[in-house]
Amino acid sequence: MQAGYAVARRSVQWWLALVLMTFMQPLLAQRAPAPTPQTTTKTVLVMGDSLSAGYGLAANEGWVSLTTARIGKEKPGWTLVNASISGETTAGGAARIGTQLQRLKPAVVVIELGANDGLRGLPLAQTRANLEKMITASQRAGAKVLLLGMQMPPNLGRAYTEGFAGNFSALAKQYDIAFIPFFLQPVASDRASFQPDNLHPTAAVQPQIRDFVWPKLAPLLK
Image (cartoon, rainbow, N blue to C red; front, side, top):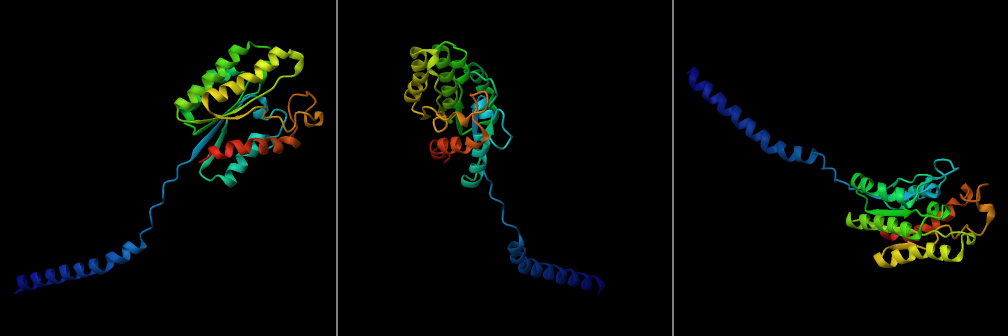
């Protein structure tokens, strides 16, 4: 009698458990949180000198910092890493580019180097070779490139100044990359736009530089 009662009791418990599972499963499925979609952040890498490192400016005043803020508002899913160093030459950039590409795996590389080469009168062929190394390394890594060109003052001689500017345009054409011939063009003609050293733009004109670069950079952020 007791054995029969125990069997019947187990049967009832099994049946109740089955009923509960049948009705509770849809409710649990409804309450389960939806999986969070994985977001992929793409990186813009800026390789520059003091003009991009923000020499003489507060941390948030330089054109690169201003561009970072603009990217945050207008290009979700993108971030910017500023690897610019004051005093950097194209040789320094060429030596560092491999490590930066491997570490950050950027989708876009902005190259703003050459001014210190020109001011030191370094050989034009050397500057071109260094820039070319940076461009080709970036492209091999799958990154798009924006080259920001520079110009030298006329006191260095016509042959040098023309050859210096020509390096940038020739490389941009050869490698079919985005290009700005002279990225300080909006402010270069106004002495008041520069700090006392007459080399580095003031904080007041950094938004102009940002806005001048943006139309070439923004189409790359896709």
